Image (cartoon, rainbow, N blue to C red; front, side, top):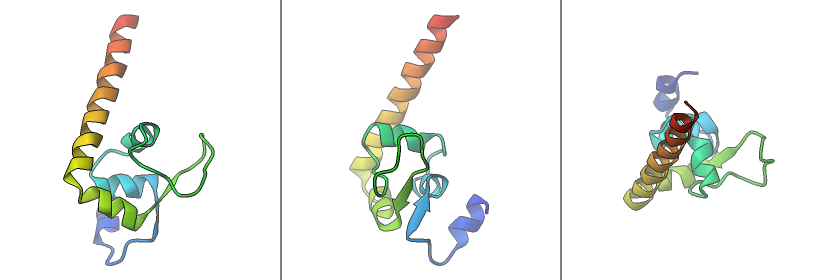
Amino acid sequence: MTRADFLALPQKPARLAAWETAVLLGVEDTHVPVLVSRKLLRPLGHPPANGPKFFARDYVLTLAADQNWLARASDALVDHWANRNRKQSKKV
């Protein structure tokens, strides 16, 4: 299923995979693990660290509507990629 197909669904599933969560939050798929590790996004249950994560639809939609949370998430992502880029430039 593509992003467009998912967004066109009249009713989203109650349990979302990471890529579906990314679509609803307006971030890239690779950003979801960063938000989880920064404790800005909580998966359902107690998944293993290297296992797939699922998220509650209503929880994700609440976060997507919260401007303060979106600002914190955006800052965390900028910080994550800045740190990663800084580490890469030191290796060269």
